Every structure is written in structure tokens, then in C-alpha cells.
Length: 297
Image (cartoon, rainbow, N blue to C red):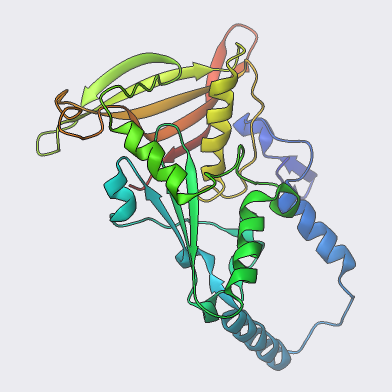
């Protein structure tokens, strides 16, 4: 629980906001507690020594690691063209859940490295391509992949695993634009809205999904989408997939039904989603918004 210290003790902020809190600190906080407990006790430095030690630490970080917020790029892919000639990518807001507290990819800057995360915005199949140059690039690439896939390293490994090869990912994109491609989005539709004049003719459809049934396919899809929250929401934790939680998806759908015959995508693409928690009171129940993400693309 989150609390603040007052004259009368500690006040739990979870009480007025009535948002469910986890009884234990997050893995990120637990790691910091362990590091602080293991750190040697030293006297506080003077302002001059503090300034010099800080400059030295920043210098070492810059020389050894690349800023993950700039090195990591996300590429939504609806067609094979989006993969071979990707449009402008977007970057994460946070990276310490994956690359530790300094949000730096060690030994990556000198290799001119970059991490490209390609994903399909309906099935959320993901392919990771790491680029760089230098004698130590292979070893550095293995360390980066371990951070993205090994739960023992970061506790936020991508569930289900990435596409094993570029060929496999492109094959999924090619199937997506075929006339017989059928993707059934999860949940029940709540409504649809056309975008304003001047747009490309898309519609937005909102769907509501719950965890009160044994839909393992939806649960797996949700975990894959939830992985993206670690890059954009500070201190995010996985929710319990039970009847108290619901997920609202915002899907983008082309307005013209002739796109499929012309080789364009004729299926839905996720542009955002939100999770809500049902808070039970004596005489009624209310929905509390817990997580909310609109993909930057």
C-alpha cells in the first residue's frame, strides 16, 4: 500500500482512492530494498565530493550504456510493407522494469546498437530485431534478449515468447492481408464511432471482455498486451484475471470493405485498451479504472 507520514502516524492513500493495492512491494521496490540493505554504510559526502562522485557516475553510465528510451523502437505492423519499410516508430516512456534502474543498455552505445520491437496490433505476435556492430555485439545481443525473455532477470518477460524468426513474422503478416484471413476479436461490442472528416475513413469499435469464463485464448492475448504497459506506465503490476476485472478494447477498423480485395488489411487493429476493477459497496458496485493505454501510433 502507498502511504504518507503525518503527525499522527502513517496514512494509507489506498483508503480515499479505493483502488486495490498489493500487500507486498513491487519487484522493482523489493530489488531496491535489497540493494540498500546490502550497500555499505558511509558518511555523507561534502557538497564538493558529492558533485564529483555524481559526475563520475554519470560519465561511466554514458560511456558504458545506451539510453534505452532512445535505443528501443516500437513498430506496429499491419502489412508486410510496414515491416520492410516501417513508418516512424515510437519509443517507450520507461525502461527500468526491463533494463534495471538506470534505464541503460550496458555496452550498447559503443556498438551503435538499437532494439526494434515489431508487433501485429491484433494478435500481438512480436518479433525483436537487435542491430549493432562490433566484436562484442553477439554477446551484448544475448544479454538484451535475456532481459526481454528471461523472467528470472526482470520478472516481466514477454509471455508466450517472440516469433522465432523474421521469416515466421513476415509470414504472419502475409496471411493477415489474404482474403480468407479471419480474426475474431475478444469480448462483446459496445458501440462504434466514425472518425471525424479528414481522416482516412476508419471506425473505432469498443469491446468489453471479462475473465469470468475459461477463455484461455483471451487470457493469453491480454497477458501479451499487458507486457506493453511496463514500457509506458510507471510501477505497473499484473492484474488478477478473475471476475472482478474487465478489459475494454478500442479497435480501429477500415470503413471501406474493399480494402481486402486491394491487398490492404480488412481486420481490426487495437489502438488502445483499459482495465477496470469492480469495487463492491453495500448497495451498489462501481468500476474503478486501473490501467489505460493508447498506443502512440
